[in-house]
Length: 155
Image (cartoon, rainbow, N blue to C red; front, side, top):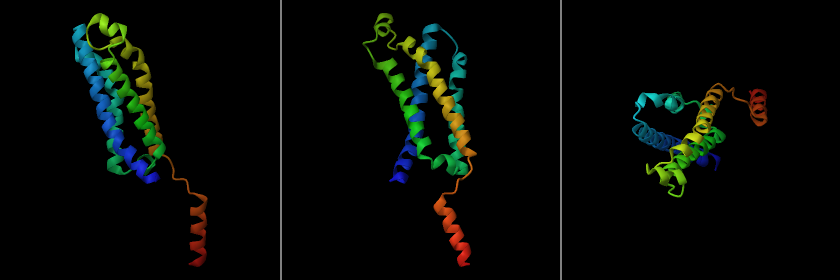
């Protein structure tokens, strides 16, 4: 059962990363159109998305079992990325927000901007935990140690 959930969350985190990146990009493009700014001004907001994507690819290529087979990490990735998607969708689709209707942009930029620091913290937390899980030593279970000692005695 653990392997099934791990596989589900492992695949889902890639889809959620794409969705979170796309929604954030959409909001930032609309925000820059409103402010008549260049897209280069928001590139630092996409650094954690890029770092996370690079780490996901490295884990997939080198088959880092400390990350890919960690149910806790995959579940946490899915929860964080789902939160980012929901915050983005609420900023776009919630018509009951006062500033959304007042300014008529269709997106409540103030709501999204207030949560942007928390989004960055969550993404950098995922990057840091991914790096830590990549270099985690494999801890042998007590049963594995007993099995090895029995094999040595039988040999």
